[in-house]
Structure formats: C-alpha cells, structure tokens
Length: 127
Image 1 (cartoon, one colour):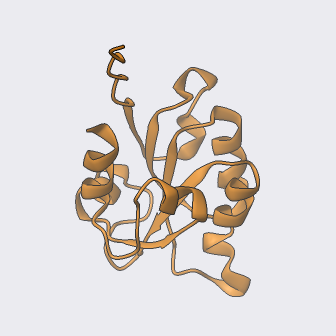
Image 2 (cartoon, rainbow, N blue to C red; image 1 turned 45 degrees about the vertical axis):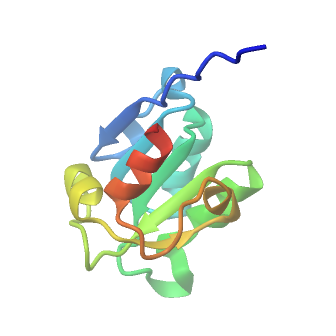
C-alpha cells in the first residue's frame, strides 16, 4: 500500500502572534512576538504545528520564555530565538536572522534544537 505524501505545513510570518487565526492550525508560525504567557494564549487558540518567538532578553522570572511550558502543556511545539540574533517585533528578522535558544519537548520531538537557525528549522519541517 502506498501512502500519499502529506503536504508541507504552510508558513505564516507575522510580526505579532496576535495575527494568527483558527484557519492557521497546523502551520509553522514565525513571529516577532516575545515568548511570554500572553503571546502563548494566541498560539493555543490557533494551534500551529510550531510557534517561534523572540526571548526578548528573557526578563524577570524568565517571563520572555514562559510560553514554552504553557504550550507544552497543550501539546504544542514552541521555539524561541535569542534577542541578540533577531529584532523583537520583526518576524522576517526572526526567520532570516534568528538563532533558536530555547525549545520545549514538543519542538524537540520535531527535531528542533537550540543553536539551530530559525530558517533551518522551518526548512526541516517543510520537507
């Protein structure tokens, strides 16, 4: 029996994660947003395959990467690029310049690891 190839996930490049919609479920969402809890709620509503954020300097009590655990608790993959590698609020910088610094277990299961370029992670998922 031959299995049909599954289509590559679509790519949504959004300066703010708030731009995602329910119709974006299953996409790869590359954003310029910080990886805080408020941003995570938008990703939970849209349910992308992978959400990429900016760590925004991580901040007090690791607020800039709090999305990792919350998204993991919802079975959603998340990766966060370093603020030193990409401009905060500019998704094209996240995609083209961003270096992944933090990932949750769901992202690791997709093969996304710290040190990977964001563009490399996206290309890997779209193969």
